[in-house]
Length: 335
Image (cartoon, rainbow, N blue to C red; front, side, top):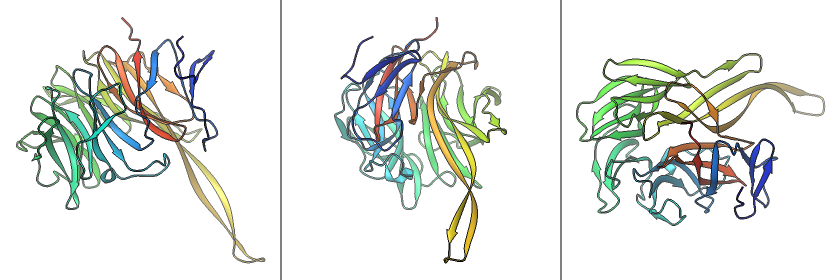
């Protein structure tokens, strides 16, 4: 096992990443199974909050979004982020592409054009641009629904999520804004690389929609453990380049009923019942059919926004030492 910058420890469960320094969490490590992941390294190092990692088709560049906030526990709306570019997927040197509030960048097949969400005038809209020549071409002049978010593009066809009557729905449209079709409830859609279908989230579970017949198949069912009061949720699924595997993040919400006492005076107090929620997300992958689910990361940190690179390389974001950074690793796929 190779040691990187002196912060790896070998354990019987696999490999533990533990960065030295002061941390506010009681445990601030990522644990992973060395039989599934190798060459785990950190790509960025500026500590700013990041999201929506997408690797270029040739694996050489990364689009992502970043907010000028370092607190890993802060709740940040997507309109606080801006689109960034790593011209070298192995280097932390970034190029700001969009200075306006922007989110959810995704690549065109040529590895130069990209689509993203811009927030302006009180609404979110789909825009396309190019990392070489720049420019800004509106795909939608107004939000399709209550908002537009998380686009995925194949050829000239986009699928994204939007709000309809307070619920998240998936929409299909051309990249010139024409032929808008609402496909049903769901969020975080991602195209299959070769087939006319996509993977998405519905009610926390992973589903697949075949656009040849509009049939929806649930691939992974998120579970609710009523005895422990735990509810699972999945996010950001995507296919491997050959379409045989699905990479995604999964976490759980734990609801704990607690009672607090507030003293109004030395003789009078009130008791209040409330619910506390704790969440941890980690990266998983499985076969396209849903078989052989494998957890790739664990530990008392959040690991999310997984993205496929090339040659079985994956990228993800992890909160380690209270720093939200992009990491990469090589996934040992089953043959």
